[in-house]
Length: 145
Image 1: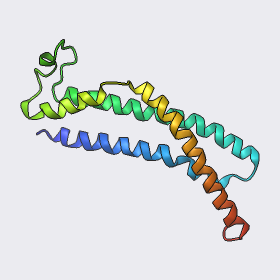
Image 2 (image 1 turned 60 degrees about the vertical axis):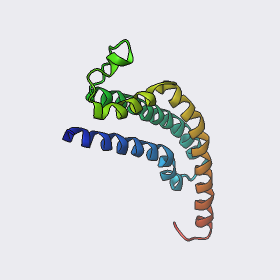
Image 3 (image 1 turned 45 degrees about the vertical axis):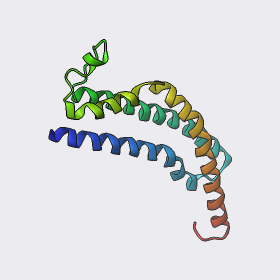
Image 4 (image 1 turned 180 degrees about the horizontal axis):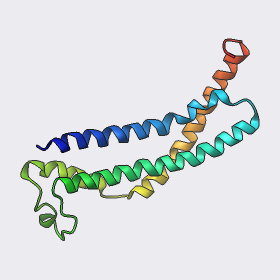
């Protein structure tokens, strides 16, 4: 097994996980700074735009890194049959490449990003409202400035 592949797969997985965590939690960083209703409106617009960009980035990266990993294992993307696809893949890597191939089949990354955006945006706003209410309660009790 090559050293590059030992580094490539964990890097891909860690970066994908990191992008997902950032997508879920970044709005929560700005809530304590909201003071007026205009701040909240700006927050909603910025959250919507940034969430769209992060969704596109996350799913593009997942798709791109999977294809790169498959090519690294010897996948022939110009093949016309399974035999040609796997002709350069070592026998010990065949199962792993098959899993990567199955991962990329089906709905494309733009559609995945769109559905993620539709689901994640209300979730982010709901978390933000809960955090805002908590921060407002804490401020009313003079626990923080």
